Amino acid sequence: QLQLQQSGPGLVKPSETLSLTCTVSDNSISSSSYFWGWIRQPPGKGLEWIGSIYYSGSSYYNPSLKSRVTMSVDTSKNQFSLKLTSVTAADTAVYYCARWERWVQDLDYWGQGTLVTVSS
Amino acid sequence: QSVLTQPPSVSGAPGQRVTISCTGSSSDIGGGSDVHWYQQLPGTAPKLLIYANTYRPSGVPDRFSGSKSGTSASLAISGLQAEDEADYYCQSYDSSMSGLVFGGGTKLTVL
Image (cartoon, rainbow over all chains, first blue to last red; front, side, top):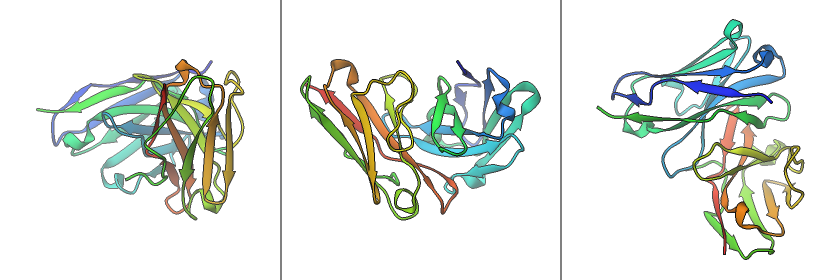
């Protein structure tokens, strides 16, 4: 059973950079069949796609966040990462990593979620 | 403001059947993109419930079914059980932004 394990700080100061990493339990991160994505959920609200990255490094970002988002992938460590700059209180949310099946385009495996609070 | 439109809440008594709608546009569902459904129990990550409009992953009971027509899709849950009380989200692919879009979520209450 594939597992996605998230890591990163749960508290970030306003104007600073949020950084999260997701470690994939097998080497499917190098497979051509999957993208790897980040999704967030503000408290009490719905899901928002942040962006996705391919093993080659090609990435796609939500236009509403594009100017502040950078994603990267490290296939040697079976990891992919998210950086969100200039955070404000509006970025407080549970952040999830997930596997995005390339052809069906569903999110079939999810990480456990990380609550990131933006506060001084 | 979510791209896909879902009713905020639905409810039903145990044993009954409920449906949850998901309406999109020509750049996502209407453009031919498949619809997927997720179940989110309180305090947990979403779980894939229906993929590619009608298919159930292994382990999902056949009480859950999905359909798609035009710019809309629906999730049906028959034989409601208390454990079905959760939030349900639809998701599709938006070709205009090359990314994923979600519905705002529907809270199912089992009376």
